[in-house]
Length: 274
Image (tube, one colour):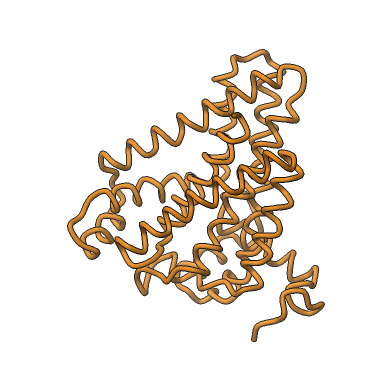
């Protein structure tokens, strides 16, 4: 049974929020959260689809945690006097380790699938293959390169303070993860099985919370003008990915959601560094 998005016993209850944050954190990261193994197993079998679908509203909050981890590493690296590019790469490495490269894997598989295959079935089969082809490797190179370049620029500007660099990381990780439930809400699953379909479909309340949190975080972290600009750029690029996925494979998969996160993170960091 669904609840109104702001009701005390539904989406507004703090206990439900805590449960959703823990569920989302277990699903999206490799952080030592209690019950991680059970949550991961349930999400893959679809038995916890209802809980995970509701927990998608907490995806941006998990992004805050991942961004804060990157900020901490960035601050330590700068305090040790490391070069800005090394600082940027170490911050990226920290966030990748925190998430188990979940989204990078999705980006590579999506690039291979949408870039190759003659029809929908072939594209979906390629995306299931754990091996990375040329499109996947290139997508990862550009993803890491663009994010590292943006972070290095921000780190150079943060020679006296890492607040700007940290704010950009937090905004990028929160907003990019908000894009995933929104795609899940407005697109159909491309297949009946798999991680994307097993997670379930967020309702309007979950999508609304993601949008609200993303807007608030972007504006608080980057300022009104730059925050709104970053949101618009990110929304446009993620919408473009969604339209491409719907045209080529009929909707979203777990890999497409990972690619959306990566595109959103790149767009946010580049806009922050512009």
